[in-house]
Image (cartoon, rainbow, N blue to C red):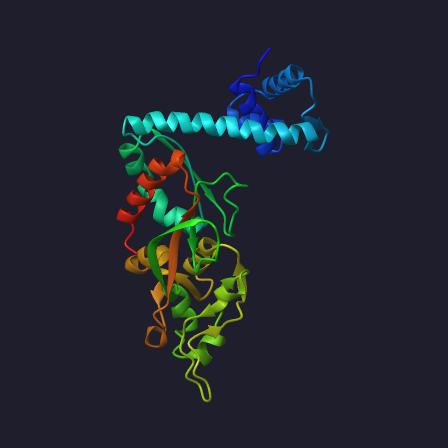
Length: 299
C-alpha cells in the first residue's frame, strides 16, 4: 500500500511542531488521529520513523532520510499548485512572513485586510521574532530585517528606512523635567534594549569638552528585548527611550509621546529590508506581498 500526501503532511508537521499535540492543533485534528496516521505511515514503510518518549519525539535514521524526501514531495506539490495559480495569473498559496513584533504590529497588521481582499488566494502567516531567524529552519518565506544586513546568500529588497527619535511621555517629562543636554539625559531614567548592545547607542551629538562623538552609549535603568515593550514602557511614563519613527510617529502625532533633544539628534535612519530565498514557486506571491507592502509604507 502506497503512502499518501496526508500522511506525509502529518509526519512533517509532527516533526516541525515537536509534539503530537501541537501537530494536532496545527492540522485541526485529534491527537489520536495524528498518532494513528503516523503509525499507519510507519507500517506502510515497514520502518520506525520517530521514537516516542514521554518527554519528546526523536527522529530515527530512517526518519531523517524520509523527512527530507517528504519535504521535497510536499514542496513539489505546492510548486505545482502555484504554477496553476500563475497560469491563471492569480498569486496563490501559503506565504510565511517574519518580522520583529513592532514592525508586524505597526506596519503589516493595519494592511492585512486590504491585502487579503486583493489576493484572496494567498494564505498569509505572520510570525514575530526579535532576533534574526533562519528562514529554512523556521520555514519562513520572507523576513523583514531592520538594521544593516549581514552578508548572506539571501536575496534582499529595500523597503526604506526609519529615523530614530528620542522620546518620552508628557507625563514623565512633567514629573521629571525635560533633559536639555547629554549630562541631564544620563541622569534621567532611560529605557533600553537587552540585546544587541548597539541598540543602546543613541544618535546624539556629544559636544561635551574633548568629545566629538555622533552617538552616546546609554545605561538603561530598565531594558527589554522588544521595541514594542520599550514603547509601552515609555507610553506608561516609565522613562526616556530611543525608537524608530515607524512605531512611534502615530504616538507623537496624538501627543502620547514627545520627541526631545532634537537639536542634537543626528539624522540616523535604520534601513528596512525584506530578505528571502528566491524560488519559482513563491515568486508570484512574494512579489505581490512586497509590492503591496512597499506601496503602503511611508518610509
